[in-house]
Amino acid sequence: MRVFVMGDDVWRDADDWPPPGTRWVDLYLHSDGHAGQTGGGLSTEHRATNRATPFRYDRRDPVPSGRCA
Image (tube, rainbow, N blue to C red; front, top):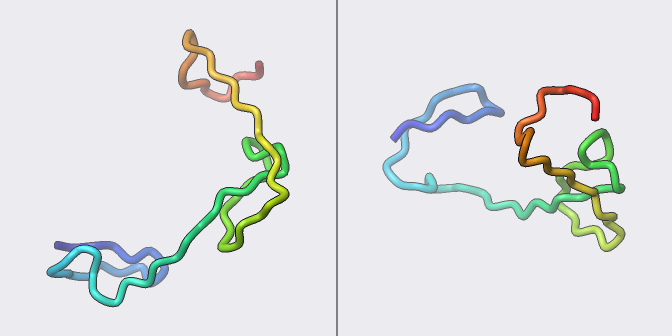
C-alpha cells in the first residue's frame, strides 16, 4: 500500500498497516469554551480545566455555509 507522509511531503510504500516504526501519540481535544471560533485545539497533555463548547445543530440547515445565525 502507498501512504502519504504529510510532514515529509512524500509517498511511501508499506507492506503492513500501521507501517513498522509507527510512533503512537495520544492527543486530547481542549477548549476554552469557544472551540468553534478560536479557542480550541489538540494537545499531547490532558487538561483538567477544559470548558464545554456549546454546539448548535439545526436539522433544517445541517451544513451551514457561513451564514450568520
